[in-house]
Length: 455
Image 1 (cartoon, rainbow, N blue to C red):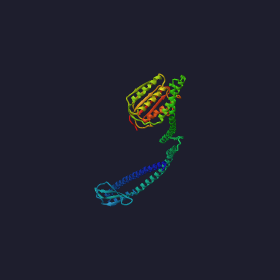
Image 2: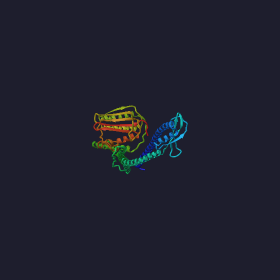
Image 3: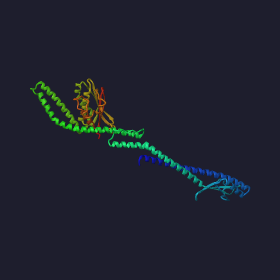
Image 4: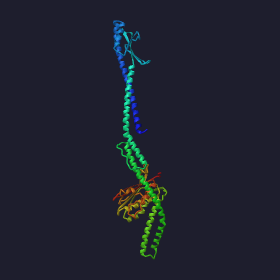
């Protein structure tokens, strides 16, 4: 059953239950009210007849008293009065009432003793059938049923039309949007003219579509990168031997005593170019080749200090100061790969820094929650922060800095693989990198690696 008929059925059923309970209580209330009214009427009639018959007994005798009873009872059309001579023998003037349910309709009887000089001369029985109660109850039930039927029909109609517009139509739109997403159609967003939960669901579906588009583009890009990586890896292997030959021949020319100064200068240029090409190929192979992380417990502060000390001469050559603030921070890491991460980040910072500027490298223990793409709760991490005062990275380039072959450096100054390798190493350690930057102010890279093994 679809949702609108289901909601309509539930609403009508609930209304019928409520009206049924109300009808039952109403019948019970009306019946109790009618019985109370009858009891008062019987008590008034009993008091009147008892007083009149007592006077008649005293003045004229029993026959006159009975005639008086008949005359008074004729004023109550639904009540029959009977005289029972000498019945009961009770000296209490209070009437008593009984209900006889042995036949239909039940009868309501009120017994009134007639006392003369303190002695009971008999009883007057006031008898009334209760068929009026049943008729009144049937009238209330009939009225309640009719009212319930009319209200149920009105409720069903209102619920159906309101459900159709408020629930049914939006749900059908959501279902159609889900089918379009299933077919790969992410273009047309769903707009609902409301501000309820269904509209919120529509907005989430639109956002999901946008994320799926981005994810599919990333997957296509990753697939292209895999193909390019395989081709580049093969080309790199093929170029390795010729470059070694070129480097060796250039070295031979440089060291030859018979070579002229001009030849040596050309040979040095050839050797530098070949060494640069060899470095690019080495980075490319390192990016394409997936290594197994051999983690052991190391003091990350010590590893970072060793890596920074190796880079200080290059920083001084470019007139850049590198400051280090490293706390003791033991963690399960691959020492060589983590030092490569630090080296890549500090080298980038040196290249991006202005003369007489400062680079701050900081190591500290923290407790942070990983980003959504990693997931999980807060955990103990070691944070390696590298902050420079360089040119910064534009907002349009910042999301792409970890992509392979993407670089903001001048042509010939970078391969676009350093940050991609760094990102891969950090992810293999189940960590993450947070990059912030402002053009003209500088950049800050924070590497967060769990202190313990995380699967």
